[in-house]
Image (cartoon, rainbow, N blue to C red):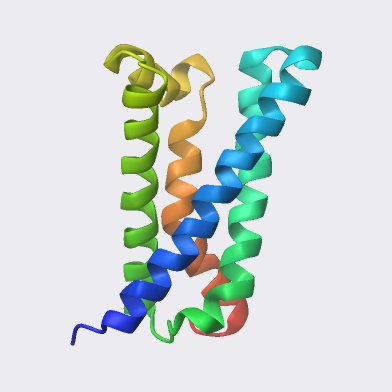
Length: 135
């Protein structure tokens, strides 16, 4: 059954995830890039982002109303799709990146870890749910 309050809560949590990602990106650009270079800073940034994503998922999972594996998968799907759409929109419209540049950010063969970060957004609710005893 469709639960609008669940979807709205998922969206609110995603807004917090998105805001966190934006702030972490700004900090990475202003502080980390100059010390380790852009490529290495992006790699480090994915790890830091995953820690924040998991923390937010863990803290807000009870509030989300997710209490079944299906709910956790739905939450991950909502967050992952919104985050992917957000990243693609920002890359294309704000930074005017080419599709090739965006595709490169996901290319793990080149050491780019954005795809892993996006995948983590999908599974974070499952990981948090396991700790909360939902799985």
